[in-house]
Length: 266
Length: 319
Image 1 (tube, each protein chain N blue to C red):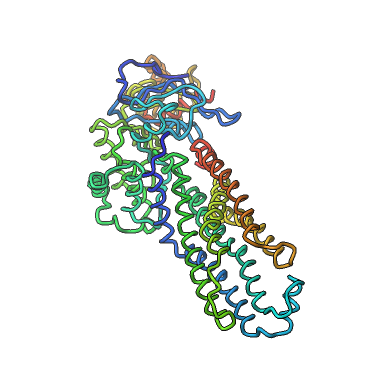
Image 2 (image 1 turned 30 degrees about the vertical axis):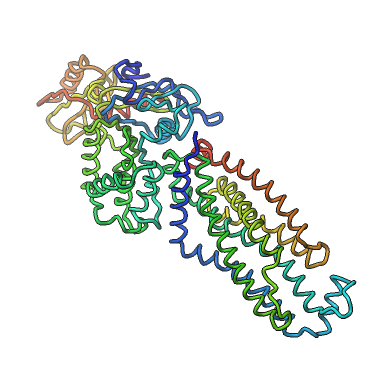
């Protein structure tokens, strides 16, 4: 069956419209970016407000025993926090599509709209494309918007100490514009797969959300000093996620097969 | 036992109606539908009857390209259900048992979504949708969110959605379910009107009086085909005798039960309605009543209601 972009766009149009009218979902989507932006700004502000505090040097030496004597511990910790926080920031593009895609696929089952939808000429690939776009576009746009706020906030707060813009740097710039869409696709793929197999949107959300745990675990490893994050480290993460994205895409098209969905949920 | 003729007919032109040949569907070990063979003519309103779980919905899902048959094939308006899924879904309209509307979207947005899925030019499709919205009493409500609609309004909007792409073959699953009598009549009139435009309509319903009014022919299924034919002929497949007797008619039931063919007897307003396999049993019924001391005022042969025929068929089907 030929892929018809118009039908995929129809699904995207409907899901986006439905999302814009779902105030509860929009509010829950807004909470995460708020946290992702305010927490690191608060951390940077803490370092900037007491740059000469003796404990800062102790903490800095824990992470890097070779830190030169004359180097600013506050500046070192600001740079480290921003690098580590990037791993946490990637939770956002994974989590937002999970919120949306769980609603859009399992929600069709809950509202009994699946059968009329599948009785139309739309194909599984068009359905996956339309629903994925409807989850990815808001997730990526929100990530970029949050990133812009984050850059402005960090630069304002850090200015008294650094006297130069800290953000965006190469890691964050590259990461937010290249890795974030890959991670968003990953969250969406997981949610589509899980929501095709469970009856309720809420259960799909809860199960899908578990995929952020490894990401949080990696950040925990960085904070504990076990893992050292840099551009290469994140590039490896990105490569792994890219491979997972391709597998998830193929699997999503397979599970959104009419026969499978109708005999299970129709 | 199939009561009438499930015979492949050559009268259906290849580009119209429905041809079903040996259709079967298995879900794992469970056989949901077995060896269905029947035709539906273009412009015909065809009833698909059967109890819950009889395989009606599975049959409709196969005929609308939602499920692949395990065996056999069918052509719907010239499109094979096994090979032409996409083109098939362009010519069929399906009204599902649940309206399945998007509650946060308005009626207009719900309809526009399906226009887009069918890749219709909205400038031409929207006037048709408006026509049906007016026809079903939803004119002026198109900008309201469906979540605020009553059950009947939702059902009517779902019917409009079924028609929005101008389908040639329409499958209606309980179309008047949840509608008040006036709305139900509007829907019945619309069904007749759609058939008169040359569309083929398959009606699944438990409302047998509605089926009797709308359908020219019916198929009774319980996993397999139990009967197929014009409603008139099915009703003629057994007859009834309305006997008016003096006094309490109930006292003559035991005598009738002792007849060799032990007919079913209903008591209706002082009349005995005696179900017969054929009219040759009528004299024996009258003789039995007279022998039991009944003073018979009148004996009127009548056709059995479809409901009676249907229930007998299901009983035979189980046997």
